[in-house]
Each structure stands twice: as structure tokens, then as C-alpha cells.
Length: 251
Image: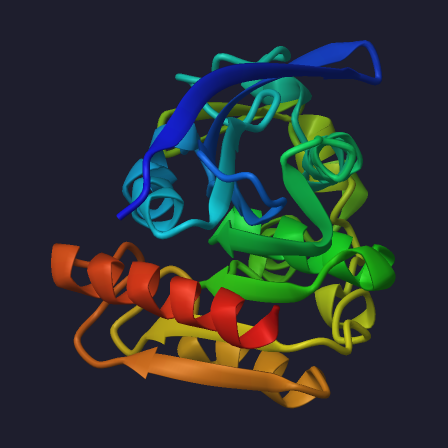
């Protein structure tokens, strides 16, 4: 087990500020790093356990709050200003910043996204194919556009605000996904992909994870029996271990 430094990091882009936390090993050599993207209404804390686990084993980690991504976000923007595409801008800005850190090996940057953050990570990986070494998706919400398009099939029917699970969303969140086919925008990433999905997920059907697994040239779908949308402590521990193994194998 090695020591590591945990620091608050703030990244400015597009006139807004991202709040994040870095977990960097005390190492004389540049470290690989995993960038964690949280799901809908999550925060950087969601992957604190995973980051601590990695950093103690010599792999850096960075967790951040998407701008407007949660009622508890420490980053800028209100939740009704957030869209999948503002989150994509946030993650792109994080990748651009981190690849220039002295302590980071820019050839070994990995993306890990949970739920909505999984969709965002998948979109960014397809855009930054050469800059990302590997992609890990935890029950990725690849059905978001389908869900919203079923709920609001016409632009005229989209309300100015819509509350989902206690989060106030703006019209542009829904409007930006109108007619959007996620699978037209992912799948080109040609490095290794690992998809973790529970077989009891009632929010994102396992079929979405399986479909993504078939789309990527080098993907493996790990099905977790009995797990839903949000894993048990044992499931999360296994994901942390598998993330470390994935990084070590793909470096």
C-alpha cells in the first residue's frame, strides 16, 4: 500500500467552474489515472471508495461534480441549466486539464462513468479516441434519450421545467435529446471497454449494456447477478478491484 495525496482541484471552462478531488499516489514516476464521472444527481463522493482503493495501489484518480449535475453539486450551474452535452463539455475539460499534470502519465488516462456519467464518458471516449487508454462503464444510462423521447415525443410537448427524483430539469435537457440516437454516437472507441451491469437493473435495462458490448470492437460485459441500479457494498468492492486489474492489464 502506498501513500497518496488528496487535493481539491477547480477547473474553469466555458465560463463555469468544476469542483473536483484528485487522489494522486506519492510516486516519483508518472501515474496512470482514472477519471470518474458520477450519475444523475450524484457527486464526486460517489467514487471516493474506488479512488482511495486505486490511489493506495499506485493508480491516480480524479472525481468531480458535473456542473448542474446534482442538487448537492459544488460546481457551477443550476440543475435546470445542465444537459448531457454540458456534462460532455465538463468531462472534455477535465481530460484536457489532467493530461498536462506533471504527476500523470498522459498515455494512460482511463474514463470510468456511472449511469448518466457512463453515457457522458462513452460520448467523450468516441471523441478522444487517441487520448483515452480504456473505458469502464458502470450500468451506463444509454437509454436516456429513448426514455425522454418516449415521454415527450414532440418538441411542443416539452415543458419549461420538469422535476425528476427531486431534481429540477430545464427544457433544454429534454430538448437536446429530442430525436437523438445514442448508439449513433458511441462504439467507435477501439481500445478495451469493460461494462459492469446488474441483471436486476430497473432503471437501465441490461439489454442496453449488452448492445453496447456488441457495438465496441473490444468490449467485455460483466453481468452482476442480483445487482440493480446502484450496487451493493460487495458489488462496488468487486468493481473497484476489477477497475484496478483493468488499468494494470491495459497500461
